[in-house]
Length: 343
Image 1 (cartoon, helix red, strand yellow):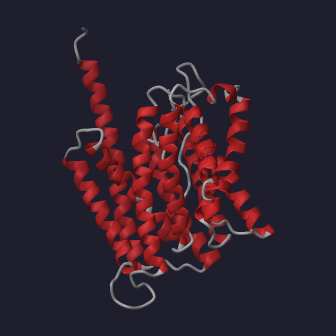
Image 2: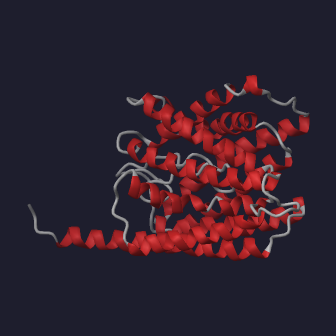
């Protein structure tokens, strides 16, 4: 069916692979399609390359300097459509991707996703790159929480334990920025506001994923992706009255590159999940932490703190546990179906 990030999907509201890195798949693989889930090295290579593209996207946005979030969302969404639409056109799916029976569901999802994207970009401008990326790892943890609350899914003690441990890691990363004592990181400062925005972005992005769960039952992945990019572009224009900045040629070029990198990253990620199982490919998403540390240090002079490294390791460990647990549960469900007597 669909090549989505993590069964049954990984289509979020855009505080993704690197902050604001929309982790949506673009293709829908038909039962007789060209998916090759037995090529793990190929899948991993595509996944890691997509991570590089998303980190490049975040880096170019950060390099453009503090700009109105709505303005950044516009460039990110509009120019991401170029590689996505080209890909869909080459597959002969572009016209079909525009057709939907649920436009209002797409718009609702778009509103939540744009909120997540804007908050993520706001945080990216105010936090060191590694911390902005790592705080976004709260997103899959919150998906588990929202799945239990909104979708009434049964979440057992193992995954709840991983969520609690992972959120503890997030707290370790965030606490130095949120301290009530004076200093550069005092509450109310830019970095504190960035942390709050990053966590709010993770929450909004997780909620967007929950909305996507309902969409994937009736909509093709290309439709979901294209409608989100379109709605994000239109919704971002609503922020013009609140003030957009006059861009220099360099800033405009960086933002255009960011959008194109985001679109290319989605395509590469899609290919990764076409060539290998999600449980094989998904853990390599956390290589974004390594790339984020390297790029942050080389380009922006961001030195990772002990809190960030310890908290990040805890969050990554919790996320990996959830992925592996989901894989185990999937295997158990498959065995149960095979063992069930015919009706």
